[in-house]
Image (tube, rainbow, N blue to C red; front, side, top):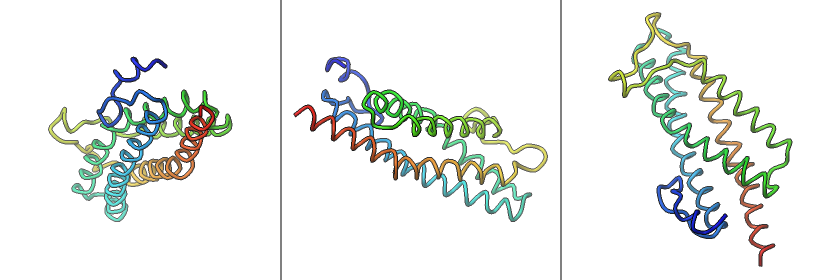
Length: 178
């Protein structure tokens, strides 16, 4: 990449990216970590609403809370996953930061997440004023629980396994250029 094109791209933190690849990738990794911390808080709220729904499936307030929390999550989720995918599948593959089996596992994880999300309600609190629960009383608690588990697993795996591999490859890139 040329330095001129790098400096014109906005990072996930809405700041210009550094000219050098090492600080650029480090910045992206830090911002993804920040996104994960925000996502963790939302996942916990979703799991709490789902637990309440499991206890009382007719609890309209808990259903509304789960739907509103999901709405917050999905607003930030797709851009986040796109940035992650670019880092993992483009930069990570080019730098051999992640093995092909790990990349295949991540592709499968992404597909599973997309399939789960496809089963979720299509709603937006911005478009309709607030999420509207279905007329049958609500979405099953198991659906919200499955989503919370899947997202939690994604965040945990990325932070525990994937991010260290990216940073290790970044450090190795830096050392090999010295």
